[in-house]
Image 1 (cartoon, one colour):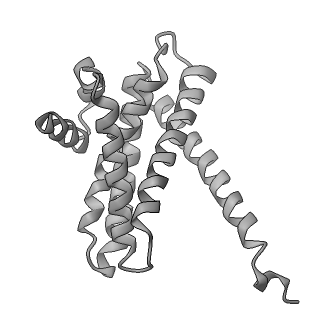
Image 2 (cartoon, rainbow, N blue to C red):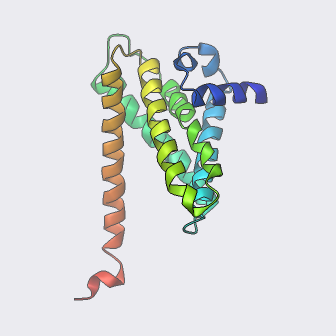
Image 3 (cartoon, rainbow, N blue to C red):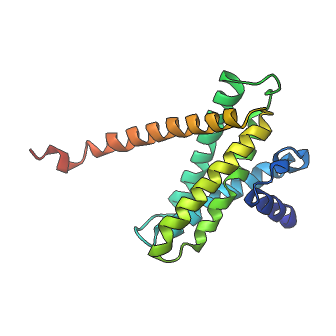
Length: 181
């Protein structure tokens, strides 16, 4: 079981597109493997961020699970429902698993142990995750175009970023500092 998890993890790190085509990687334990990757990604991000600002590891793990579902929902709706290819009839669970697998590079954020390493490691792993999401989206949705997979991921990201920024800005408007004239 652990060997299977490590195999998926390392294939995801290598951006192996066959990972998303092989149905054995989407078996009964796959959703748990993907969830574990997401939780470890969140915890690794919190550990890296703790070298600069204090971050709750538990909240980061929970946020990673929420983020996993949000990414999965947007990629599913945009890629499988709004702009599907002819062969894009895919269950949501497979998209969710693919999104989880694509976040495997985020676990490498555990290596950002000094403040000087945090920004480069987060920057590199985030682009690595985006590459994994594009490959995952293309393979799981059976898309013919890399550009379409890229568009689905970027559009999902922009929507998530807009919602996140709107949420943060709405919380900032209630701070006492905003009432000072």
